[in-house]
Length: 279
Image 1 (cartoon, rainbow, N blue to C red):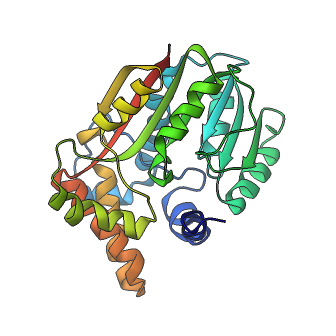
Image 2: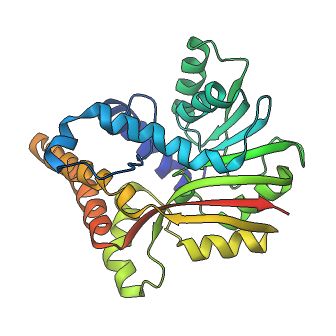
């Protein structure tokens, strides 16, 4: 096992059991999308239902451009505990194959999907998403990825694999942690490098650099978006988590939340999405 793989697995074995599934959302390990800014930070922090609606809304915003239909085969790259896969099965009637690097998350995804009665519609396997997938060429109708690509050490290889398995005219839809376009090296070291260190990410691309990689692999960018204020309330939850973990004496997690919230509110960190169609 490569050292970066072990680092990501360790991060999710701890974070998956504590921060993510208990304190963030029981089924989803990604941020939310909010059509309107909440009236106040304080009210938003205590309103879990509003936050959970934002998580669901994010899945709708990201997957809608893919044009997923009933019976379509969808790949979930970096599937976590399978929450997005189950949502897509229910929403679109699709079949989903999910890949994730962390064995504990694949076990949870498989068990939860079986318990939900969806085991025949969504299946999961341990895989590094930058390695070749056990999927036939030109056999997939859509690929989705929710905030996983920051853990991929070679995004170009991942995108090339997407190009291999997708049918022509079909789409990749992804949300991703990113850096601001035009960022200087000093800004990256100051604002983004601490995020990568504390969250076990490899590095952060920008919307422009992702677009270039997709185009180099034979895709056309149909949509790209910085979520901007639609995602900002997630930073408020990070600030709240910073205080919570600090109170518990969990300084490493507190600092993880602090550096992400600070970079987000300063504009250095970007949460965005891309929809790219295979030519």
